[in-house]
Length: 71
Image 1: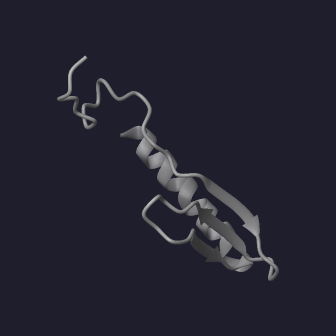
Image 2 (image 1 turned 60 degrees about the vertical axis):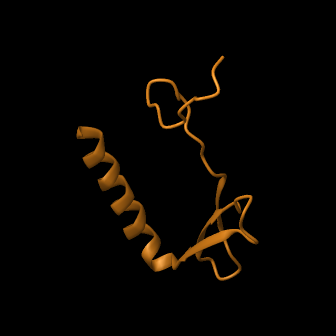
Image 3 (image 1 turned 135 degrees about the vertical axis):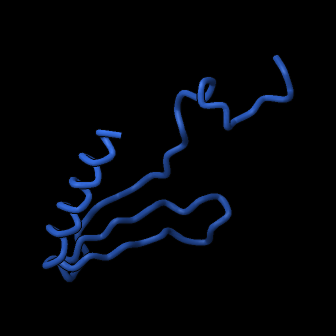
């Protein structure tokens, strides 16, 4: 083993960290995307999307996924 390991080495690091993400509806039936707080944060991060806008956001995410799959 070596002490000078580089965590940015793309060949060695095969699984990148991923924050926990939850998706649910709030009391107003808005779509909530919630990211679990990191060790240096005091609370979770929220993105609240109105029910009327949710389909547009989902379609945009699908479009970006298709575009980046080609890259």
